[in-house]
Image (tube, rainbow, N blue to C red; front, side):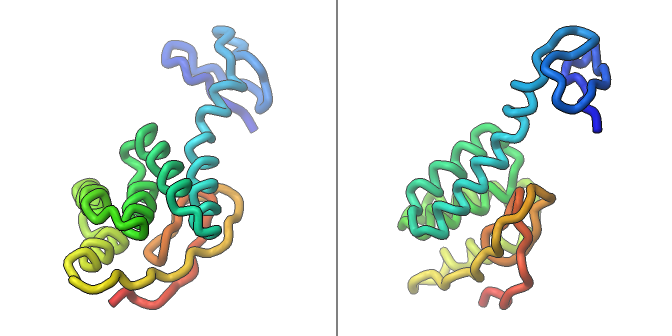
Length: 156
């Protein structure tokens, strides 16, 4: 396994675990940690949500969205955490942003439908257990880097 230098003018292939790039001496270990930190925070947010620490979960998801604004899974999770904390306007804003980036997203569509109903929001399907980081699955519950979602009931 190798790591390509992130410096555009270098792009040297380096052995995995190398501290600095052989081509330009750019520190690679720090880059690797920064590169994986959003997935770490996302998984911390999932764990906090499962433990009922919704404010902590929201903060983790918000950090991921700040650093990775195109991450629609993190936005979906942030919106759901906001909804569960009673912040309907933030949930609406995040789900609207998701649909702007990924039209037809089932989680955002479900979330906005919940916001349109005057009653208490329904509980989405429970997210699956964490595993190694991978491509986010959809459409049940909150899922994202490091998680595989099980098929669940269709939100109604």
